[in-house]
Length: 137
Image (tube, rainbow, N blue to C red):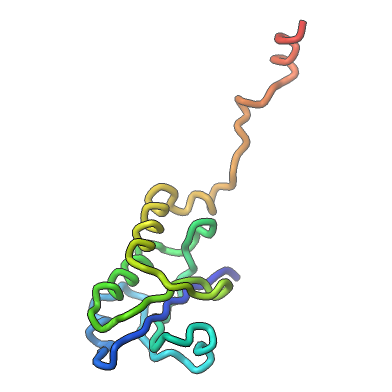
């Protein structure tokens, strides 16, 4: 279980998926948007199908370097007009190049640590019976 990545985009009529797939990281496939996704993102014409988990602040699980690279390829493709990114649980939202940079900065600062290592209590800052006794004669 977990949140899977969803990436949709709107392409111009002259779009050729073979040109885009040349530069995509492995694990991403361009497909015309299926009918069942039309309600989720009605302006999109295509999806990037991938088995990767979603990555975002508060859900640091998916391989952001691969996801971010795929989003950058979309933004660098002249025949791609708009891009949506999200998870299969929350649905996609429109994403801009500056948003990719923000998530990339979060990834570089945190990686997968928030998910892999739960918050720890700072034991040194907690009072103990010994220190309380010393301060309260």
